Length: 508
Image 1 (cartoon, rainbow, N blue to C red):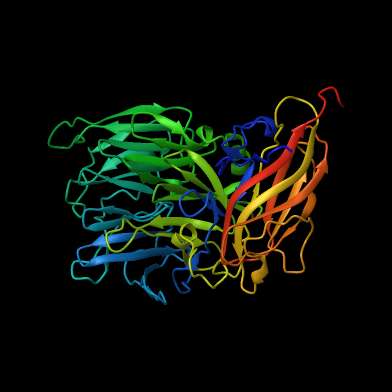
Image 2: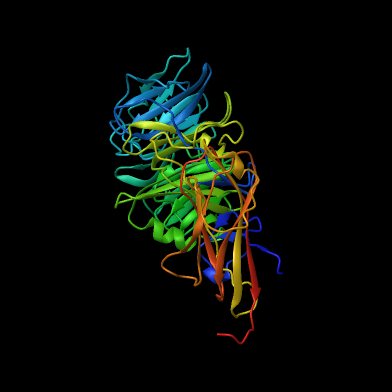
């Protein structure tokens, strides 16, 4: 008898830039709602996201976890142009913050020293300064001479802004360490295109446009009192940033997105993470008809959500160390912002579109896998039901194979699972008289319209279970899909194997 062949071989990321019948072994065709590698098994089902605020007067258009001398403050700008302060402990009450001109942000606020700075995406108001010297938040407008800029960043004790109506290609600089005083009209640099976003690295300012990126090097801009050493130069002429809410930072790098992909730069070179991860084709089709692209970094993962004009949305997660991707469902974020971990552990928040509330996303990455008695579900009531699809495996030389059985090793638990399934290795195919937890299907051809159902698999109660279901076909190759049917307290996929051997090569 032939031994079952290990099909997954530690694959956990998905790719679409390869033919399905010629994919590298480390990739799957699709993977949704698994948190790969970092906990327990190779594939572990994600946890549900939880609410991070009570209701506000509008959706969270932008926000920041600001670091002030008296402690962190979670600050949000609603789509109703109102500032809110959100308490970061249950039940997460929301307090409207008085003062300040209404803002319509196109980017998250930024931290600069002990202050937070916010910009009006309509270019109708000067930037705002948020401070809390005694623990109470105050909002003040910058000097009337400040540009009414749509975008900004903080670099070497200066607020740096761009996208001001009437000079939307000009970068301007505040007086160092004095953002409240009059701005020097001489302190500016002109670029060739309208500015769509800005970022600051250790020794470089990144200036984004639609379809191109510039950088500014140097320590001081020109001023009325003397010439500076700053210069603006092209960084890349085929990559830009279409939505400043996609800009994030990771290990002295800037991550951002446009129609060409998701990119990372250290200020010297730009790399396309979508291309390196094998999802460039997928990204280009995903980006079509987008209405917003928001992203941020949590730990070493860049999470980005593309919302489209037809009401659909897709959330992708990139492991920035490995440059590989997987997907989350039911995460319809309009904005993302993360804490720096200055008090407590690092956290990531999302403004869920259409809910007027924040969501806490950290639980997605760290589901309870020990002692959990509550099934995984998102706070909006939708159950977490992971799914993955494999490549189409040719399994050696071209020719038909004898495909007998598929074996799935898993641990999927739900309350009420009968004890007699513990440790079961099923010898007889077919479903049992219990509520099925997983379904397994196969397809003979790389692009069949649907999978052929092989049967359903029962829940486990205490641990590892290996189950087999029949194939009984003679295909040239085979692909599999594993779908979770019911919510579970824990989902672990350990392995997928197939009992497949060659037939006479001349058999057609």
